[in-house]
Image (cartoon, rainbow, N blue to C red; front, side):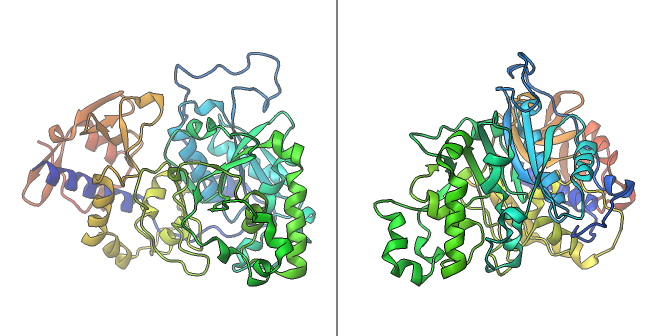
Length: 467
């Protein structure tokens, strides 16, 4: 009976998520000058407040970005991936124990059709209380060093901005977390921030030592004893540069930007790799990376670099989901061809859908039973569920279950399902809210009222009745 109840609850949430996600076209480019309509493409995010245990900012005469209590996060920002960046920021804030102590450093291209001032206005209108700054990255610094890669998107000069963070950010910023724009953080980012880089290590990242490291470089590279000796005496493993903890003090002291540029110059001359900005990082840091738990980069959810394919979550706990690869969740959702994991990204999407296209086949596909079965396998298996984590202090004794509305969230408390009401700061056991009557789901109380306050009642395909 209880497992059946869980299924009905999740199925109900799943249906509501479909109703609130209206297919539209992915954001790809914007006009030269962006007007008011551009600023209105994203709804304002909820305001997330610090817990009682957070350090108080402003104690001391520090510049805005130099307060030692800040957690620094760096990301690139542009028109093509703006929707992903906004969703990523939203996820960080939602799950942070001290969201007001998080400072975002956004790197924008000086060649972008959208100015840094416009991007600043977009971020501020979406996150009015966010501490952030938009920096302008001069593409000319690196464009002459870039070689064509396996996928054109990897050749964007902004992909190389992570190599220049030590120069772009203020000298007082001694440490930073770098995140790609196609990630969702589902854990407290401060846990990642506190990871120590032992010895003289400059960066930390999840490593994948089972991967065939040799494939990232050409036969010519491995056949050249002078070049390949860079890995001599090291146990180099593949790591993804989309999630990194970086010590900028050590980076500046070791002039690591120049070391990366040197390998890019060799690449221009001898063609020793195919994967854009990743191989230079492997060449400089391979074998000397602080290994971070794999939970902090569930990468590859966008398929590989050639094929936009669906992939499942890897076994084990998850703190960060990463749609690296060709497929992006916002594009697949808008085209009506989503993968199962894309629905884990959707709750953080703040994009306002202006066009209402009806894709009946899309709805049929989403409601297929095999998708729901897959979803349940991930959620009900504690070892595989990405939602089995503690979230911000506001719900310190609850485990987040990943399905939410503006006022309610499905949670786990003491191994039991509960419905948490944000506004009333209260929760009720699911068994007290949802009951089985044949094939119907009957809902009562503020839970259903809260759901209906955010959707069009006419679109609901289930019959919901009160007791």
